[in-house]
Image (tube, rainbow, N blue to C red):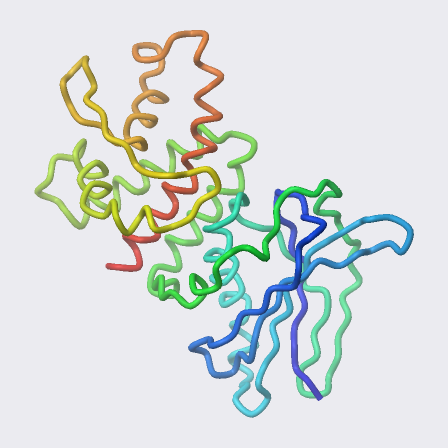
Length: 265
């Protein structure tokens, strides 16, 4: 009998009508056979969709400790997957599991992702899932990032500011001799090519400009951080509402920059 666990996953983006099942294989964990993400229609009469993630196991390699730690594996998988989507992180609930001939169904009320049709997950590249981002080594930091991202839709400017300061602090521990105000700028500049390989929705490249007030160079992330932190000095009153929109646009590139730093340290 097959062994698997099924989760209902809820992204903060609607489901595309054309979205097809995605299948991920070739995991370093030999007890994982494959993982699928697919949309499920909850109603025969209406288009009421949710997404489900199913982890399929290889029974011959599966151990009890693997099942005990499967949620950590799932969180890492979803973290890496959402790096390339409009979603920041997802809410998930276990729906069903079948392990070594023992089947358990969870009695949960299904929540809809949405019935608009906007984003097609089938277009995303699969190789990002196999990237080693040193999730277990930096588990506490990744969990902190995920917790902060819970508020990204509600307060994007605040979330951006907290994540930027988190990134700045992490860099300062590694590059203690560099001026703190230059840390993020230098990191983005030195890693610009690899960071821009990541295909974000609407994000093209990192830009650098000279701040005329102090003649210092700023990248996109640092400029927005300074605009938010010193809005009264740097931003016109009529442009205040734009700070949230800019923050929402740049949160994902910032998260990927942090991830790139963590996976290389």
